[in-house]
Length: 176
Image (tube, rainbow, N blue to C red):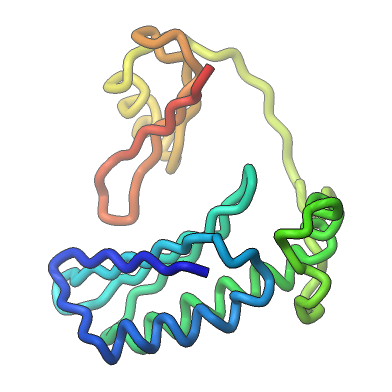
């Protein structure tokens, strides 16, 4: 596994980079050698935020943690990724059964319940309303939701606006 370390307002020393490499190598046995993981480290007001993304074919593993130091954040991120993989082991094995690039059978069993359809507790249907991004953000705020699905009148696609942890907004655009 290749590891791409990106820093924002943070100086990651060689010791931290070496530890990131070492900890992510533990996950290496589950993936092909040509996979590239991206680890982003950001200094946010005296705290360190670490995000890690591992792209698979049509799927991503992602974890983030904020801590007082990068070493603690790293431990949390690697633990979250391991837990995700263990928790979804059976579904991953089914989905990638014909792919030799992934070795999910080596994953340890999860201690928690396996995710499944029984976790779906509510289903809603609604009509998509054509609007621009600003109107969608306003509607999301009026509903006091964290996200809002709408028909983007500028692109004629189904998009999602969402509220980010830092109070700003994000837009998920669908491709045709």
